[in-house]
Amino acid sequence: MIKKIVFAVLVFISGQLFSQENTASPYSFYGIGDAKFKGTNDIIAIGGLSVYSDSTHLNVLNPASYANQMLTSIQVGGTSNFYKLSSSTDTQKAQKTTFDYLVIGLPYSKKLGFSLGLLPQSAVGYRLVNDQLSTNNYAYRYNGSGGLNKVYFGAGYQLTSKLSVGMDFQYLFGSIDAKTTLLISNVQFSTREINNSNVTGVGLNFGLNYQSKLNDKINYRTSFTFAPEMKLNSKNSRQIATISFGADGTEIPASVNDIDVADTKLVLPTKIAAGFGLGNRKWFVGADYTFRGTGNQVNRFENYSNVSYENSSKIAIGGFFIPKYDSYKNYFERVTYRAGFRYENTGLVINNTSIKDRALSFGFAFPITGTFSSLSIGSEWGTRGTSANGLIKENYFSVNVGLIFNDKWFKKNLYN
Image (cartoon, rainbow, N blue to C red; front, top):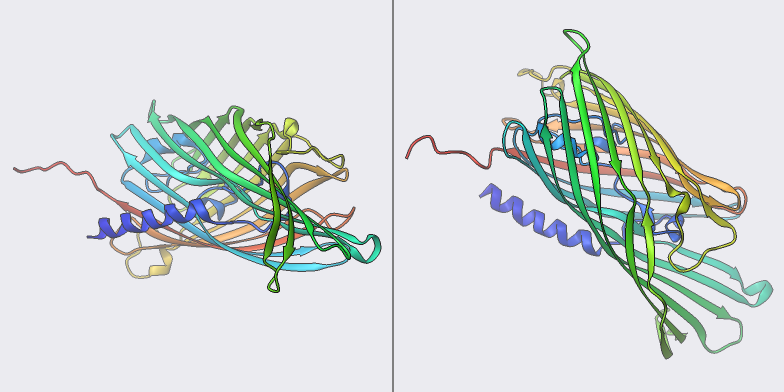
């Protein structure tokens, strides 16, 4: 019965992942949108490290982690994001609540494991106004929605007692809408342009984990992941319309024209990450460095004179602590306490200013008594961009909740 309930929940969540608008960042205006997936909630709480994994936690950032699985694992997560957007003259607030991921891990043998899942790759969700009606008698409104999702299937294999390798096959798909509305004073109709991109592509992600003993009490582990450049096909369309507005603000088209535009090729850049960590069953601390070749990225339809791209990089540090993982008297001694920090140069350059992203995170994993499952609750505080040079400073705060269901779903009968 429990398994049927779990599958019903998974079907509902997967449907939500396809349809939601899951960002309010003005920086999702550029490229293919705001990069969304930083890891499952337990990994986000330790800064998004790709170096950590164990037998009851999948780390989707590194497919080599699939080799360590002991039990069938299902992981789901959701987040509420709160934004404070500030320019040099104005401040606005926004909030989004979304389902984030659906991940399944399947152990096959002591050395081989598989994983499949549905993840958000990028998100578009901006509302910008360039209001000059009072001075130049016109104003522009920019609205964007949509994003890309990723379906993956991967395998991890333990080559030796210390070394495991893995690979993901990824399929990306999604649709992005960008709407621009021009309003002119004392003119009956406004002009609206809608650009749509239906994007698809395939790619690979390779991973490696090595772990050994530093001494009798402390283990060390290193990791390496490599995702080669991915080519994306974008089927584009454009619609031009003259519109008026109803009393409630509804857009009423007066004339609509579909315009032929060329399809384009987009690029998801090469990604390389390396990590190192120390710890044991009670505690762990580690660090990751990630490089992305975003210098050759372009926008979907237009290249703006004040926008360019550079290679991006990210540094993440984090870890966890369990006071007493086998305690039977005190429940909170079995709770996992996590914390992390990340600093990222996003690769986006606007008005000659590199857009940086920095965040602190922490979280708790509450074990479900009598099982290997757990409930994760975490939070992240971050800042992206700046209000200088005509830009927008984005302060964000998120609360995330994740469930990990671990169980033996495939058992051999010992007796007929």
